[in-house]
Image (cartoon, rainbow, N blue to C red; front, top):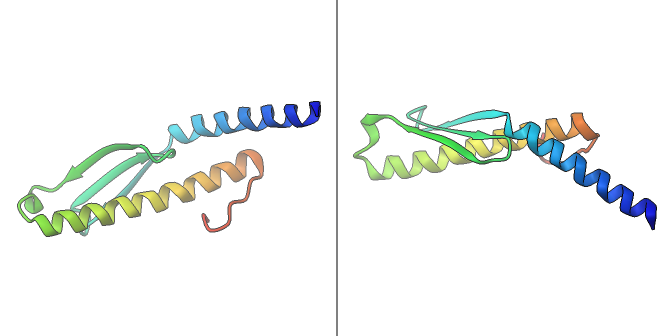
Length: 97
């Protein structure tokens, strides 16, 4: 029982370390041929959104571009997360490479 508690505490410590490392990562994704850029940290928190002036008035381009940029950035962040977790703890997450 003590070993299980110790293992859980170690996992919690390791998870906190990974979260701190991921918070320092900056991942950029884009949509609409680079006219929309989103920056996230490795924990998938949005840090910034940039939109080119030329598409501000086009609602459909704006909507599809934001969707594309968010999805692109999330995929990149997931890859970074999987790499960092693998490096730090030998954790292999299928589908995130």
